[in-house]
Image (cartoon, rainbow, N blue to C red; front, side, top):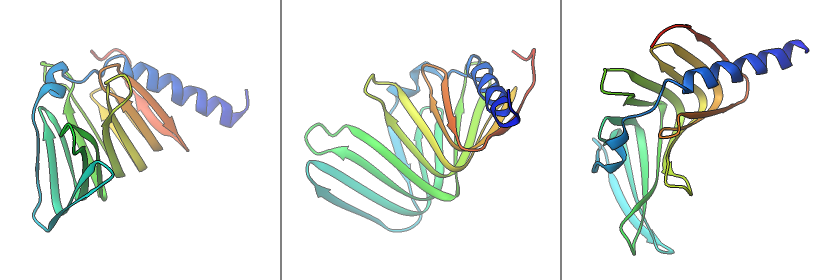
Length: 169
């Protein structure tokens, strides 16, 4: 196995080990989504999608999930009023969420954070551009990190580096 192949293999193995201990709180997805911004807000509608654009010190929360950034775009259906996607940009944008009732936290950052439900109804957090994700026993940096919170799955792309502390519960 060549050096780059070995590095990718080790990064994937570390991500799988990290994901096994990193589920988000189950009831977060059932909570109300709240937002705030210090700057301007504007709303538009096109093709059955309502878009709310906010600037300056934006915060979006749902249960223990928190996303902060410089600006955000919330997209939701005009027909059902269901939120379909949140895009937050920052320098960097930041994500934080409780892993369990024992006080474990997962946090991350990236130039852009996407928050949405996949086709199976799972909550997805994508950290794009200079992405980092950290928990009590793992940290990983890659170009892009996709984290499916309920399934404890992570996919990463681009150059990756990280550290894993074995034996932590």
